[in-house]
View 1: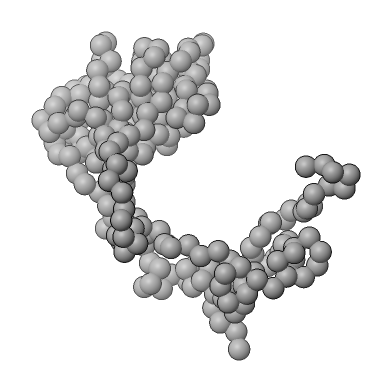
View 2: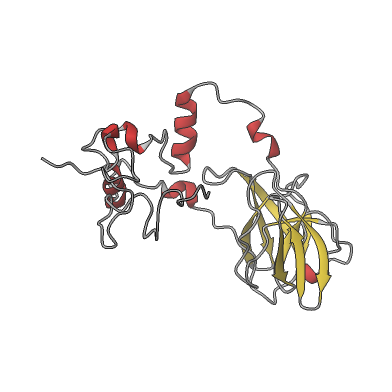
Length: 242
């Protein structure tokens, strides 16, 4: 008799795999476009769903949350869209940020509240400005171009030392992942039983020559939709090609 495999169980949303809403109660973002002035850091908050501490900032009547810059403290004044000196913690449009400045929480599109560089200890560097666009050197050492109207925060995200202390016990890592609603430990598909996964038991591991097969059907249900999804081909090309 069949059994619900883990992908289907997670998709069903039982109590075992349900996301902890409390961990994601803080939404990172910037104030609405057109709102500028001097804001105040009300509080630095520990959020289980984020790797860095969050800064609760009040600007006028609006309160928003942003990853805390390294060196930021409660009661500090920061400027939004209006900082001629470009100090740490200020939120500015990319066209107003000097080159070689370190930035984080960069907007992908103007007004979306920030999508790039939001991990503890992360930062990018403004390298070049053109008409209507700004080039930024990402932590991956690749350059990416943004619209110069997109906003970013100046500085480096706090919490860079979170990986300095090793995780000595598997149980501790389990609870770290559980806080962020991530399933851990992850088991290789061929290591589980055949009833638990289409690749289970290790039979038919030679996927290129029949057996289990690596390409699922286009309309395969959740749990069977595994492997190379809609792959055009698999294996090595004949003639020694790579």
